[in-house]
Length: 230
Image (cartoon, rainbow, N blue to C red):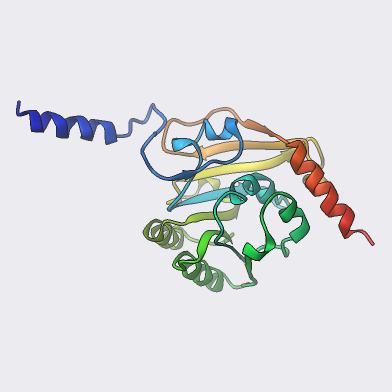
């Protein structure tokens, strides 16, 4: 066989993903800040230029505890929050390295408004990451956001209820997360997070991961909560 053909075939073989192996394609990723989680994600982190979904039970808001370590090191550009259930509390985020000057909160309420705002943010050159709360989004709408994230090489997380875990989704990564060790009402002081990787480019992950709380995270949150008291 022609040596050039051998080279091409070898490259194709390297690029082919096998369902029984974890993908290690040279796609850009952002480390999660947790070695145990990085070890279970293709490339070793959150995918850049792709849609990641975070699913949670009703009343649970663990997204900041999960994403803060990565967001604090995601660059210096804006982090756009589209339709969060409550305003971000700056001191707690700043204590973990995410400066409030990077945050842009879009208080959109209607689903169409949130989808539009998320897509526009992904197209903005000054934006590093987008977090969008889209509980009612359809697969075709998510696909449009996935395409925008890929086209403009942005970090994109979409927050959705756990009830949609069996619905079709274009997300390259889907995780389910819940705090452990405390009642849901006290989730900010949980011992850690229980996380299941529902979808990734690789074999299914049968077991849940326990991501332990970091001492720096607890001390930062404690200081932030203390400053909030009268």
